[in-house]
Image 1 (tube, rainbow, N blue to C red):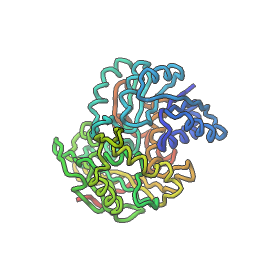
Image 2 (cartoon, rainbow, N blue to C red; image 1 turned 60 degrees about the vertical axis):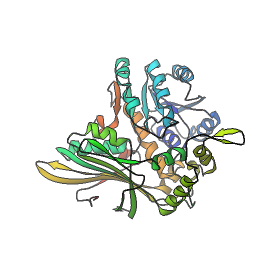
Image 3 (cartoon, rainbow, N blue to C red; image 1 turned 180 degrees about the vertical axis):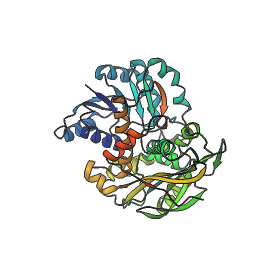
Image 4 (spheres, helix red, strand yellow; image 1 turned 45 degrees about the horizontal axis):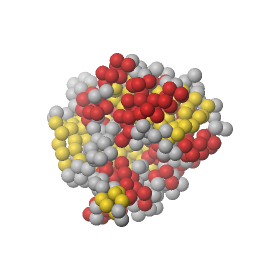
Amino acid sequence: MKKALIIGCGGVASVAIHKCCQNSKVFEEICIASRTKSKCDALKEKLQGTTKTKITTAQVDANDVAALIALIKKVQPGVVMNLALPYQDLKIMDACLATKTNYIDTANYEPEDTAKFEYSWQWAYRKKFEEAGITALLGSGFDPGVTGVFSAYALKHQFDEINHIDILDCNAGDHGYPFATNFNPEINIREVSAKGSYWENGHWVETEPMEIKRVYDFPQIGPKDMYLLHHEELESLALNMPGIHRIRFFMTFGQSYLTHLKCLEDVGMTSIKPINFEGKEIIPLQFLKAVLPDPSSLGPRTKGKTNIGCIFRGKKDGKEKSYYLYNVCDHQECYREVGSQAVAYTTGVPAMIGGMMLLTETWKKPGVHNIEEFDPDPFMDALNRWGLPWQESFHPDLVE
């Protein structure tokens, strides 16, 4: 029996679990585990009458390696799908090594006390996973995730070499709040308030936060302001895409979001340094997370679309070529299907597909690997089948 252990029960995990239950031929059994078991039980109750997938639940602290090992031994899954916080990646990888179980996540490791995220910590596990004969699939969300699959697909089918990649992430959804984040507020704010960077000619170029702005006319959405950020897939694509000269990542933000974020930064509410408040030590950003709207509550309120994709420039048969691969996702359609807005949907669906690739052994390569290191074709086919159909343009507008 093909089993998956899914750690986490937030917005992304909920989408992935819904999609696993739609894909019962592969996911014959899933165990949903979280620190708060009642959330797992509620989702099980909602889904178990609608699917052939057998659903069990468990309580686990994803920071407790011994507890994770015990749970993995009890469930005996073919893959552990880490849909908890990126702070917990290494703990879960340790548990997978101890039990020789395949691993998958959607975002790279980030220390809880430092606003820094990079793949070095997880890449350090390569030899251990190879020797254990198991696969760790890193970054099976959308960005990172689908953007890596898009890159591998473009290189395989459209180019002899890719020289430039611009990753564009546009969320044109409107949830009606003056300020809210579409995924975990703590992770979101740490990401967008950090310095930006991009890869060019073999080295990193660092920028101030939100320093570089461009306007892009997104298909099915229209012109939107977007800003250059650092993002983890830049690091792996720079390593894995031959012939690459430059990779950049842009994300759209509305003026209301930026104004509120600037005010919160100015008064210290985005800080991750502990402060003393009424005799207790608190972290301002974690307090802010507690008072902001829960991203999982935004589904019924959010209207509009997302457009996430990659613009490639390179050479084919000695000639210059450009090519654009992207997905457009409608927030309300996502909510009608799985009760979630599109930001969680576009991450949760690829998480399920990555799990499917490992459970079926369509992808099997012992070690620690980023998603673009595998054959993209079965994943691209699955995107069309499971709710994230891709579109392509051979004459796209380029980003200056």
